[in-house]
Amino acid sequence: MKPQVGIIMGSDSDLPVMEQAATLLQTFEIPFELTIVSAHRTPERMSDYAATAEERGLKIIIAGAGGAAHLPGMIASQTILPVIGVPIKSSNSIDGWDSVLSILQMPNGVPVATVALNAAKNAAILAVEILAIGNETIAAQLKNFKTNMKNEVLEKAEKIKKDGWKNLYD
Image (cartoon, rainbow, N blue to C red):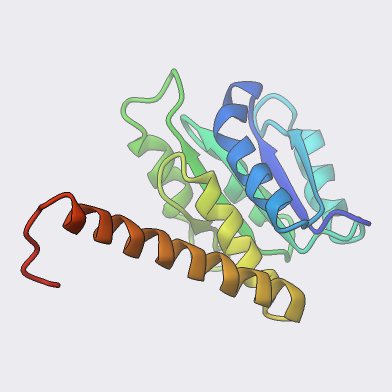
């Protein structure tokens, strides 16, 4: 099956963060591709990736980048596909805000959905939510996923109560 989501990053040092997106997509059995595409070191590769993404069957691109974090915006400027940017706190980052703001502050006409710093898992969940719009199977899996998250919280709240902690809410 052709990949529906592209996961790209500017460097292999971003892989520990970006593999969180890949792992989540695997749990939903959504085919994806994962590669390195540097906006600064391989601009031709980046342009080719964006130009051919739709014909390769991609529906969404998740792009992670640290430091100046130009990759998500540059990809978004060259494709009509939705791009989800993952700001990454990198070794050359001040505190991660440089990456957050570089991805978040896109000009009108070139939107990039932006998740929290190092939140590749949230980027994948957002991609699944987008894909679920036209796919009942994915929608059912997503509802189950969110129900499981809710149940985990309720179980943890019950455990705290059983451990003797007083909770005015319950």
